[in-house]
Amino acid sequence: MSARPLRFGIWALVHGSRAAYQDPEEPYDASWERNRDLVLAAEALGYDSTLIAQHTINPHQEDFDQLEAWSAAAGVAALTSRIEIIAAIKPYLYHPVVLAKLALGIENISRGRFAINLVNAWNRPELDKAGIGLAEHDARYAYGREWITIVSRLMQGERLTYKGEHFDISDYLLRPTSRYRLRPLIYVGGESGPARALVADHGDVWFINGQPLEDVAGLIADVAARPRASVPLRSGLSAFVVARKTQDEAQAAYERLLELSRKDAPVKAIQRQNTDPKVVMMQTLQKSERVGSNGGTAAGLVGSYDEVAARIGAFHAAGIELFMLQFQPFEAEMERFAKEIIPRVRAASPAVAGNAPALLAGSR
Image (cartoon, rainbow, N blue to C red; front, side, top):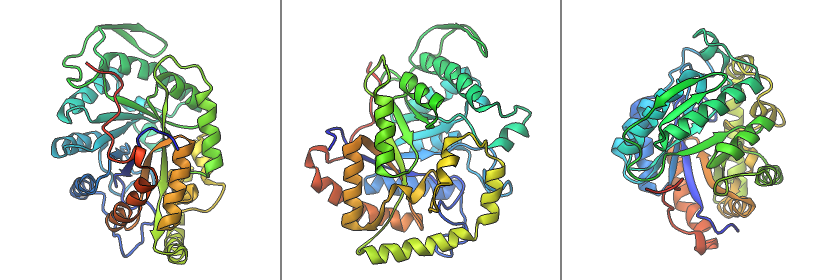
């Protein structure tokens, strides 16, 4: 098992339920109040991180509520004391100078607990309807590479002059920078060739979508073999958890959610129409039926408490250090996981037990 600290995080409910929208046990609620209370509860339960996905328009149906990620991240930063706060960002929606300034602001509000998650966009309407347009897949990554180069250098306090294909920055300096470390962390999502190259060059942590252990191990090995100038890359995995005392009970709970999720077929059809077919995440999702987003139950965290804990241990041994988790109904199942699974995982590996502090990209 990896000697690095093992961390557990939760997906914020920025666009409501993660498994099925027509679940009587979890009515649709993407409000600020629910997300605030959810993150505060996660922190109290010992979770280490939360991810706030970023959309301007709900990616499933435009008349569904959608929480704004960056204002929510600032609010949560002021209310919490320990949990890491990760806000996703799509480069085309924010100029890099503006985004770097926002990130540094939340970094200092949180006292060094903030991170950005670079996602190179797949939700076509939020760009097309704004007149920005969704560029071709590899062109988005070329733009994102230039964008994150600027953001990273500005966040760490460099006086920047930069001229590239997309940006022309002259003698720009941001103050204050982080009062707690070199800069906020950079998480990168995506599994295509350009995404892997980008994360190797600019990421601190790589977010991998939920999928079987052998596939995850292969992805980690591929990126680990690439040249890298900075400290070793760390990896996180998205996963939907269905855990019960017995495997049969877990399977029954999974089947219930799967049946409910089938009722959302019209909503999922809208999402497919709005998505670039070259996005690897969407290609992976078509391989099998599953519950949850970003791979969901494909990671195999469905089973008895002992089975789920053992599978987490296997992923950790393969190099996964952060599990970004989904549940439904979220609050009750999040508490179940904290009480039943986390202690089992910690007991199996005392060397990595405890809540690790936010990873540093450097220190001041």
